[in-house]
Length: 627
Image 1 (cartoon, rainbow, N blue to C red):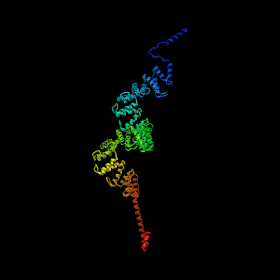
Image 2: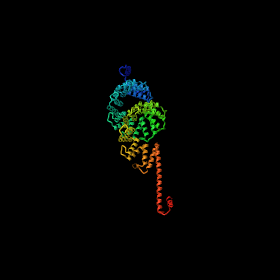
Image 3: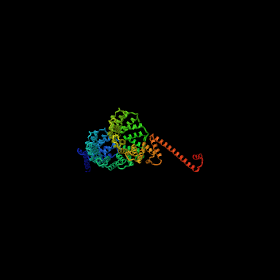
Image 4: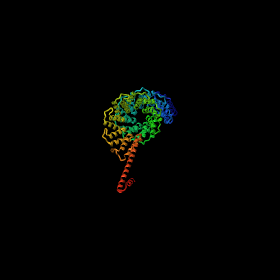
């Protein structure tokens, strides 16, 4: 019985082992086989793990293994824990993607976009992004938006770009929210709407997007989409800066510099430094300016050049231009016109308008290059193409003088007018002079006054002084001393020393104002302290002549000598004549004083002789007096 039972059991086992498998059911995997695959999948060998993970997914249908496979493929892509191998990364991304894994599809799209592991192919990148997006992958939706925005792999379509950004934003994608804000700001794909711009920036900012925080700060600063509020602007800039946004750090430095939140140059330098250390070239250049001007830090031209150089090496055109200025003026470096032109050229190649203009000036004056009026005109023209009004004015001068171009006063006036229309006050003044003299245009005093007035209204002190002279002399306008004094006062308040000197004359002579020697001295002194040699001589003359109203202290001649000497040292040669006059006058006074003393001494002795020698012979008396 035992043998028969054993045979039946053996027979049963044989039959179960050879029972045919049904095609529609997955075979039941024995626990020991699954454990073996798991060991391979969890092994540290990069050649074994991917195949085991893929096989585990195929046999169990567990998506966890696809996730792990995608993560391992990413390790091959980034070279983390294994040798970097983009080909293998793409291979395993593809296998996972074929099984419907969204992350893998997205990563294949990235590989085709960047040409890593496969040949770059924007069309295929878009295909894979689309597949991933259909799986609900927000990054893929966002990238599709960028593709439609830039026309990469698809025809440019701002409307579809906004659609994809919106899909991604609905899934909480902060960068997509930010981009929608940009679209509403610029009116691309949607109608421009500042209110919605602020709404989307706010949504992105609440998700921690630093660029959105920065742009919100800009909106509050400019009052776009919201009421202007510098305090809130500073708050958003600070939040963005705390997230490491270097643009926000840089603009915070600007806020502290301008005193929009609080004027504090030290804090401005701190923010510039933070941004510069993170590689922000604008901050590097601004730090250079701080060291150059000695604001917030001790003035140090060497450090200024160092920061300019760091920014210039990263392609910052303003920094290149500033280095050129340093070489031109010899500040922080040895003066070198050749190097100045080199740096101006580098900045000009980056489209820097002022650098183009300065190169034109160098060719005009022959500084750092051989003088060449034709090239000067060429560079002025290049600067004009960027809208540089100063270059327009200089080109007008070239046409006026016939230098580098054929002389043509009419064209000169045309260029002056173009520059003036762009707000260039020097051009306005030149136009005023042209109408005054009738050069290039018909003489017209009324238009001359109009152009000078436009320039003066924009703060040009030269124009203010000319208007003051017009009203003083009655040229082009009815003579009016009161208005003349008003214009001279405006120019003087802005630091124009010529106007200060004229005001001194007005108060001295009582023209346009009540005569006031004290105020006359005050204005002369202000102008003299700013280096005006005429004012120095006027002060010297006042002290020399000893006007009682001007008398400051008893030693007036010494003060007169000092002011004349200052004027001479400042380059006024005729001041030496005034100094010589004081010396001669002083010598004459000494001689007169000596004669007076001698006469008094003789008179005293004569009186003594009359008292003590009344009966003495005249000869004895005379000998006593002269002894």
